[in-house]
View 1: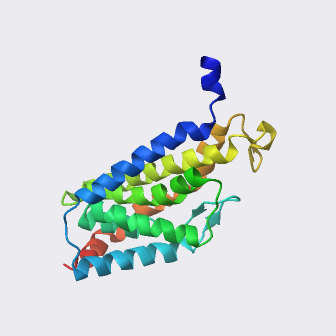
View 2: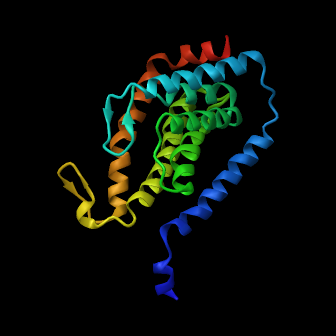
Amino acid sequence: MFKKFAETPLTLWIAPAVVVALCVIFAALVKTRRKWNARMLASGALCVALSFVLSCIRLYRMPTGGSVTPGSMLPLMLFSVAYGAGPGLLAGLVYGVLQYLQGGWWLNVWQFLLDYILAFTVLGLAGIAHNKSEKWMYLSIPFAALMRALCAFLAGLMWVADTPVSELVIGNWQFSTPVTYSLVYNGAYLIPDTLICLLLAALVGKRLLKAIKGN
């Protein structure tokens, strides 16, 4: 029995988790009853566009996808903080589709959902700071980034699951397992990206929130 478990492809372990996550996000979107007014729609479109433009400015690019950018996640996160997790999830979903159309990678449907649909949709979880004190914003930003990192980590596992150990190399670093490889690879660009978002939030976050809300 345990041997059969060990032989189960990685995709079959990850796929149910992806389905559950998509169902939870869909339920959250359906439950959101807030109506989109002109200000909210314009702010959402502007934040998605700004995130997209910033994502095209790559301070450092990883060899097989993923980049350090000048805070490309921040506009989406601030929109989520301003209007809540529901609208933020929807804005993140739109942004994820744009990221794939920009030149995304395709392995299978589960990797696509993890790398683009879920990874950017979950940035809307920064909306947990909606209508809360300023310190919540500084907690919600790394939380949403961590959720994106989890999606990227799982997608990375799918990419390298069948890769020989001798090829699990980043620069001069050799890795013994796909788990450590995916952790280091995705952390190499997401940690700096998150720190840049936090720095920019500390510098201009409050002013940008006021502009997004129209206050």
